Length: 475
Image (cartoon, rainbow, N blue to C red; front, side, top):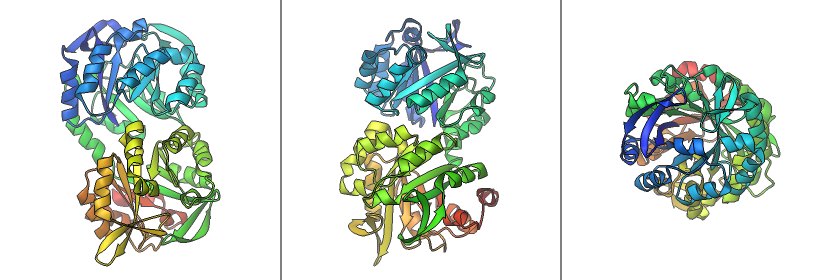
């Protein structure tokens, strides 16, 4: 996620230098127009900080934030002075998608836990502002006495899933982020903040959950459409699928029969070390109505690997989504439940943001077209594939995982015709899945369709190739 920043002081958009309120530059007297321009240029999220509120512990720029919220349709996250349950309710009530807690998180960790339990980990983000390895509070004006690494460990125990980590000495300097600050963090989603100066900084930040870009935009050091395009180019991803049945990784052929492969935690760590972009946990047992085991696995994985984890299989309620995110998942995968109740998909997208909601579509060729199947490929829904893919996009899906039942596990290559048809029909990213049997198959699906990612399983599970082998071929 590339997130433009708007810092507010006295109703103006400003930038500070190293957090010093005496060293500020005013970039706009109309932050609302600025926000609209970022949206028009393609931004998918906005980061807004109330600098006055951060110092005083108030909602000083509330009216301006209300105007921004009303003027743009993309999600926004707001920080600065949010230190009470009432302030959180106020911001969420006007349509803010995430609130960022800073000072109160350092002073009262139990409050953070309470707010996560009430509103969900997707909506409660913690800002970790660091000066010389110590956490700063009250608008960067005071030292909390807490080491930032110890503080992050505390946040993880509290259930925090997303932090915004800022090196104050880098903020507003255009000298690149303090990368060593981020390398020591694992088991939590990190948004990089402070010092971004060029497109290369954005590229380097790709291993993290997101990056906030402020002064570099205002000083024309980076061009927003260009870096957004860069982000899209980097999104040719290798997603490793771990099908879970009774706590073990298994593999099927055409969704039938399961061969046991091994321990999910060991395999996920292996593929992460090899360079996988994402790990996808697909709970076969839960998808067919059995007992779920995937959330416990995700919880264990989130403590040991630093790439996004998606979890799917039996996700059918907002409560399921909350539980998945609380366990450490970055995204959830919704399949049969969306076909049965399309409004659930819309509800999930509105509650958690479309970037965290994937739809899995299992399809099979029937006569001259493709039909969607549910229940782990057992039930013919009668729904036509392209029509359903378009509807999923309209309902708020952020991405589609497209599974070909005909090619699944056969290792004879992806269904290129089906993949291309869906990719051409929607604007959201599509992950090609089903049939990968060689490195050449992955090269082919990227060359012959415009899919954003390829799902691999058997190729890796049976030792035919490593993630590094695939990446080298793609280069």
